[in-house]
Image (cartoon, rainbow, N blue to C red; front, side, top):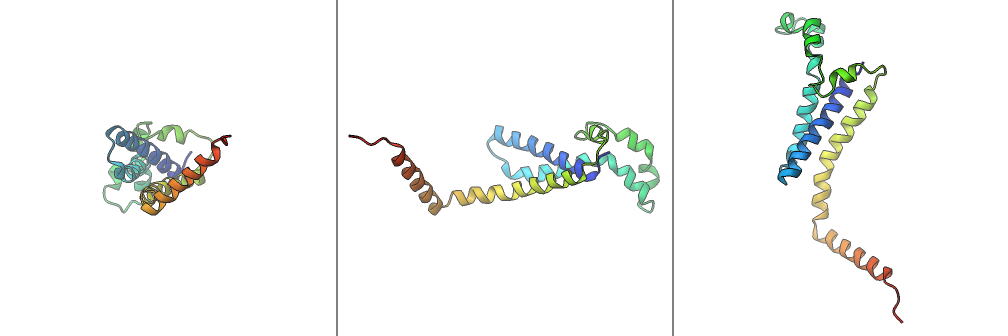
Length: 142
């Protein structure tokens, strides 16, 4: 039985992979990877919603949406491997949290790193390093 963090982390990874593959094919749309990861994570925890309505019976439509019938109906691998993760004997809550933190940090820091690499000062430094490495690798001519 995996808890919500693992479901959300796996959903984020699947949503991010789908958005990244679409962005690579189209060669644009890389800014949509973060929102796609969030939507993938939310899609992965949809089968857990009937349990939430059981826990909080004061919510609207809790009598209709809550219950084990709806939970069994929603338990499927269509929701980014939800049934497979629930069949696991161990709890991977901490691993799911680590996946969430890692993926969000990658999405936040990658555009910053790309922007930093495009700056002229960094480009000059990169050319100097490549030139210095190229001169050392050449054999001495006699």
